[in-house]
Length: 250
Image (cartoon, rainbow, N blue to C red; front, side):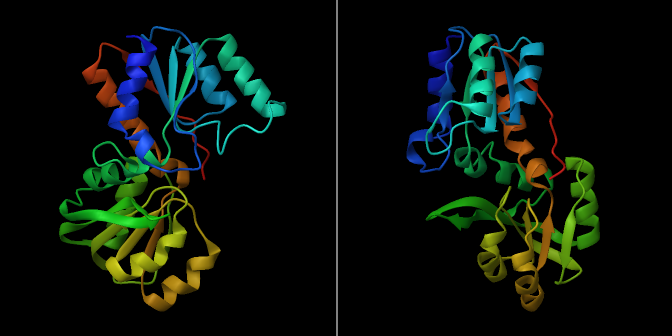
């Protein structure tokens, strides 16, 4: 498939032009004209670039791209990364907030689907005026410790927990990555708030509000969208796809 046709599909499906973001979403680096294999990863970094080359990928689709608020200079690490993918003709496509908030393949809706939080699903988590997460309910109340165990097993992560709420939970809100600042909205809406990165600042807020908070890992919570995109593209087009796993443990 031609790069420009595939890029157009990504742009329209993820509504790239409609979502304001600090990430420069879309095609960040142009490579080969024709795409036969795409690798999917969370981060645009030297490690994923090298692994994509080893896989003979024509394109790398990531959640965290290289370009944020534009490029100020092409030196140091930025130069080395650009030089590598340009020399190897690997196209780089990034989707940050568009992949967090997407209603089908997004990180947050995928989390609800995986853990069968399938009742009363609504948009949740306001960031710069837009909802980027989702909330929903279990069909029946679930033990908090059991839920944590399921998350750790499925996402291959180790959760940090602020266990300040009820042992039995039903209403869950999730915003992947670093979204601890959305705790006020969580207090008003859910029994348990799931995000990625721990935050010292919200410890006492959660404690005083009797809210359970699960920090499931920034990386781990943001593997879901790229995996879902890989599956979608593999089915929709005659293109080989592969997820590249480069966990940070964070």
